[in-house]
Amino acid sequence: MLVKKLEKLLQGLGLPEAELSVLFIGDRAMRTLNHAWRNRDKTTDVLSFPLREGRFPHIQPDMLGDIVISVPVAARQAHEAGHSLPVELERLLVHGLVHLLGYDHELGIKAARRMERKERQLLKRLDA
Image (cartoon, rainbow, N blue to C red; front, side, top):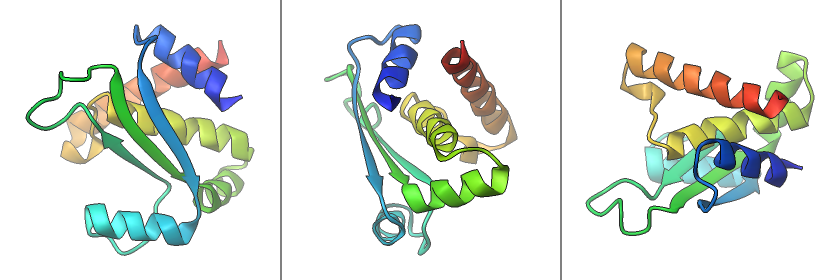
């Protein structure tokens, strides 16, 4: 189900040949990744590892990167928000994808708003 939705998003973005990986893990593994890559010693809901960054971002333009989602965090967030786990997983998948596309909410208020707009746009495509 998520694969089809991701394919729909990529098609709508004009990236039908894009490749990325999605990994679903637990809190302990997510905490380890978050600490190793972001120096934050706690779990988080989603991490993205874009391949379109660095000195040579255009060598493999169809390779977007990796999205890692903590299922336990997603389940807690779904419960707190009053929606289902699949809905939360879709939200996190979109958030991770938007990061792979170069958006970053941690660069300031304008960047965060720009990213939120893109996420809303993509989530609407999933509902259509």
